[in-house]
Length: 317
Ligand code: CP
Ligand code: NVA
Image 1: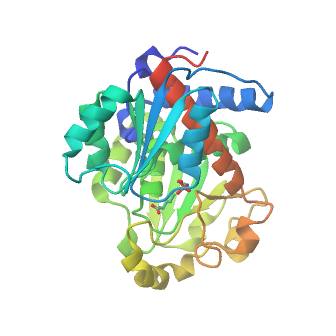
Image 2 (image 1 turned 45 degrees about the vertical axis):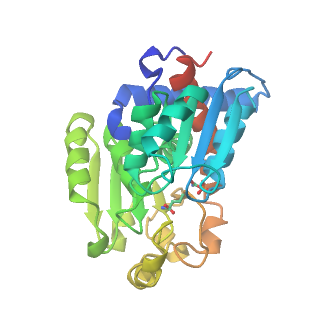
């Protein structure tokens, strides 16, 4: 598939992409997953280099970028926060300029969205947001792929996110969902309701796609859900809020009784992982038959490969 309009672009948030462009990433994701299932070997990143910058820990995102790029003869280089002068000694702008001279593309996981933006502006190569405090766009693409594997086109499908209504994962689902016509419910206590500025932007996109975003504090809102999704109660960098979150979110734990409230046997359970079993989800749900958490994790690799093929090569052939 040819993706000339995507070539050279960064992925910092899905706000920067149209519905058609997101659908193209999904088509390529399906293509590369099928290739893998057929056992095909490709060499589409030969001679290319990828910088992997991590201020925060990661299992899936790092592994997905490193293996997706490396197995196609690309050369990924892991640069942890204690390895390079990221914002220490030299300016972020200068680091970005230098990395842009040496690498074909850069992945960044860290705290501030503005760091990812600065890297993109000054490196002049594609930069991928591998999670910031604000967004986790590569996760959201894998989540949509997982939903489509179970239910077909996500348009009109009911996804209930239960937990911290302000975190990076739900914010990314709001954006991508609003562009793809998803019926997203955010079930959260009032004090953790989503950011109004982002909600307004997403509702604007929804006018064109028929997407819906509903915020509710009531667990009964899971009725008829296609999917019930949760995430950790305190995200990386919010360790000092843990006690308060446990108090607020304890009633919102996803357990068997809550799954049953959907009234459907085919409701799937989703989690971006890592999960804290016994907090946001019980072991019986995440390790049970309805769970698709492990498919989501696998799909991180296929979707990330698709994003890199489209933006680095301009084609998935
Ligand atoms: N879901 C996710 O981003 O996992 P990691 O923190 O392990 O990368
Ligand atoms: N919201 C979580 C996602 C982890 C992949 C965090 O930011 O820690």
